[in-house]
Length: 273
Length: 264
Image (cartoon, rainbow over the protein chains, first blue to last red):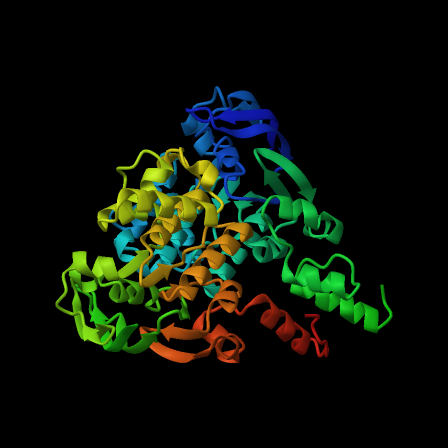
């Protein structure tokens, strides 16, 4: 099993900006983890350590039993797929299918297996009808889905999505939610960075909150969105979901999602729970 | 006042039009929200309203774009740019790539408008302050986080103090506090008379910012009206738009057969 383990991770960008300031974090294989926190709190910097794009200035990041500071990126890339926040920093091929095949081929998929992986990945983001399309003829939101498909096609045990719902319409958000479900069902680890608390509360079993290069909260959506934690969330520029606020006002306890509010109200009105 | 009259637009080489017969008014001081599914025409509408389509990217435009009643179809891009500001969807696209500090980056636009240096310095300081990024002034804009770059891009526009401003998902990468700062800054610009159009998926943000909303579907305006009416319209989801959180929760109550009055 491929767990991720960060201990005392510190990272300083050239020029002295400290982006990570002692992160300790264990992510078990097969879990669904959202990383949230204010802009500049170190979320993207942290996940770039998971596939060796960045190497810790101090501390250690292990993926399975591999120390990412001494393991070649090519080896880590087969374990950790990372879809960038900005798809345009990732996309360079002349067609959607070539773009999606690139990473998959690099991690060793060939022939029918490669073809199946590319088809499946394109279908999962709803781009199977655009195989020959130049990525730059797709709008931003579909380029973003394409960059996610490229990572899915690599069939890595760990998938990291940096702000996947940015720029997506209601359907795009549902597509991403179903991708997260499916990856989790397959036993793969899904890690997402997001500011969208509605999305993370509905789709992730664990939420890690960051501020100034450190983790400051870590728990289920119900734990993190409980009223006593709101000041901590606000200290890193986040807001509880509307459902959580309504649940607290109605005295329902921690209700991070709309369905949690409904369930709690039904339970109260029927005297159950 | 920016007005689109019967505007249709087709990208060069495209088989069909991306915008069809759009009529839209942006009155001075008014903030109009534009929503719709991906590929419904929001970004194209932003490019047309700002004059980049067809001037900079080609294609064919039918209909008229008017500023204060004057048809600006013949105006060159450098003149349009002084009258309408645009905030691109991808903030990396917005950076000048020639500035080494955030301060210089935000100053780039107003300096190019020929504004006197002391006034530019004052505007830049105000913009950085309004967006809560004063502490980034000396940082290299190319080495900021995604959300910080987005704030810098918006800062550059605020410092230009445009009469008309078109924004394409200006807060997509921002945390809630960043969204609040951008909304406040935009509202204060609108209060000074700037006409604004903002394309967004975040309907909670639009609920706070806009007096009216138009919904695009396949390049046409299919729904338009006052913000609260449009955002509560049951057809919104059919058009690929996620309703604001209070509307979604109210609907979840109705589906469960619950009658709940939401606390204010």
